[in-house]
Image 1 (cartoon, rainbow, N blue to C red):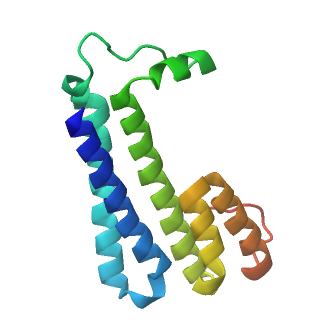
Image 2 (tube, rainbow, N blue to C red):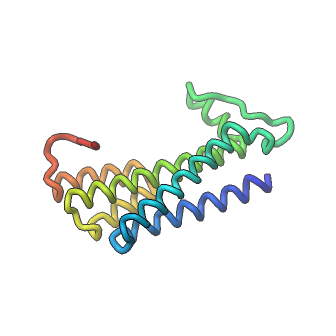
Length: 152
């Protein structure tokens, strides 16, 4: 359990560093920003893969993960295991950060002011999909995108 607690702290602080880069996006040179965010996301992905695929030795003895992904009850049962909860948390950290990176780079390519993005980035950090939804609405208003969602 000690390893899982340390991994939780390390991945949280690493993701927070990535969010600080995103919030201060225009202040960073493009190359340094891209390199640092790429390294952070890659680290989170590696931590996720280790936790989920190789981290079984960190399970509580005699309490292997039970449950599955095909019913709500199965997911609730699965997430009673500390290692699975950590894996799920790292999944959130990595994907929300990638959504934040998408928002920042897409807005920059459309000429949307970074200052307007700060509420959407904060909402993405805290509530993932709600922040993306806010950004997509902002993009309709400020970015002139009237051809549907057009994520790419």
